Amino acid sequence: TQLLEQSPQFLSIQEGENLTVYCNSSSVFSSLQWYRQEPGEGPVLLVTVVTGGEVKKLKRLTFQFGDARKDSSLHITAAQPGDTGLYLCAGAWYKLSFGAGTTVTVRA
Amino acid sequence: DTAVSQTPKYLVTQMGNDKSIKCEQNLGHDTMYWYKQDSKKFLKIMFSYNNKELIINETVPNRFSPKSPDKAHLNLHINSLELGDSAVYFCASTPTSGGGEQYFGPGTRLTVT
Image (tube, rainbow over all chains, first blue to last red; front, side):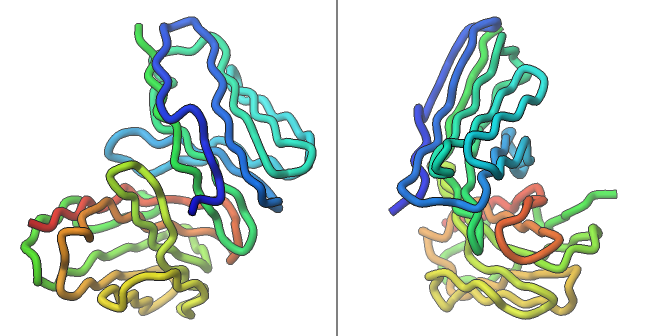
């Protein structure tokens, strides 16, 4: 049983479009992390959100932590082919529990 | 200058064999992990060591035995390999134990035939 549910599982969009990835759980986490993984490589941390309701921006990426610290979303504005990858959310308590990931493909 | 390195990158072996994967981190972190990523890309923690001491041992067959000779190294030995062990194994490290930012290695793709 996965602690974190990510949706959608796959997302294919055209360059310039926007997209949102969701990460939901029934558990409360001390923090939530988002990673991006490219083929043949390990995941790389994008952001950590800690406070309920927190919003963080990283260039065209906007991350939000739910008020109850159980869910999060990642929004990409004007997606580019370089945004292609597997996006993983991970909830932190005494360890990290990962969602199953969202595979994002941005077509040129 | 690689922060977290793993060897080998690829490992192809037959059922029943014993194999090892090595991991080293030069970040000065206290905590190291082994994760398994299956064919559906689900990343699951297997073990965690803090300063050479085992602190997390998830439900993993005892054919898997981690060893940490010092806090910069964490190796994974697998006995009697099975088809279901085929996956990508990632080593990671964090400055402290708990759910901090993970620095991942490049992964070892294990294929059991």
